[in-house]
Image 1: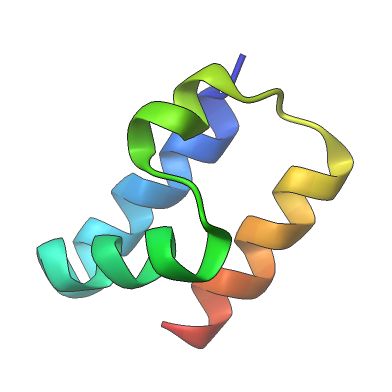
Image 2 (image 1 turned 120 degrees about the vertical axis):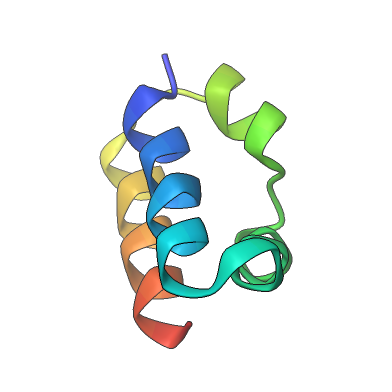
Length: 55
């Protein structure tokens, strides 16, 4: 559960450090801890894909 979503937080960190991770959390309304617990559903992955493009 949530491994794919958690990888988006790692991508955000690579792109812009903690600030990018915070922005990802704000856009998705999900913390990295929440992402680990959330299912890697198609809907969640699309949400994170769209969010990472904005960062």
